[in-house]
Amino acid sequence: QQLGGSNALGGQGWSGPKGGDIQILEPGQNILEQSGIRFDEQGNVIAQMTINLPARGRTILGQAAIEILGTILPTMVERGLVFKALNANRLQGHVNSVEDQMWVQSQLDQRSLVAFIPNGAILPRKSGVDDKPMDPTKAIK
Image (cartoon, rainbow, N blue to C red; front, side, top):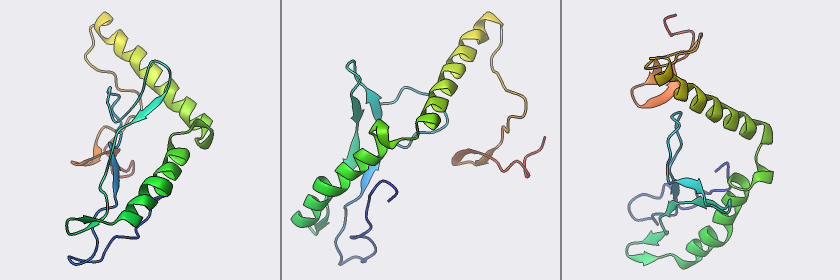
């Protein structure tokens, strides 16, 4: 919804319309080459996503599909994939972090190390299914 989505079709039970959701691979804290969002050789952003067209039974709800593809999706792209809509400082910070991580990783073999853990790192995760760090007040230091 932050990017312009809508819950217009949600929550109507078995007899109500279904679908209308837009899904894209959520990035995690690991820096891995993924295909959910990438850049091509010309610098174009390629975003792969799944759009479940809204339907009632086996019939697509055409007007709702037009709304999703003609209004909601373009709004989401403008708010989430176009540089001018992004926080340039946060984006630069992310790029710097990725470059730092790549440099540190390149140093491990040369120094006969298997990992790098910075001072103050919180190693335990929030839960077994959440990559975010555990609350620092609950982590053992």
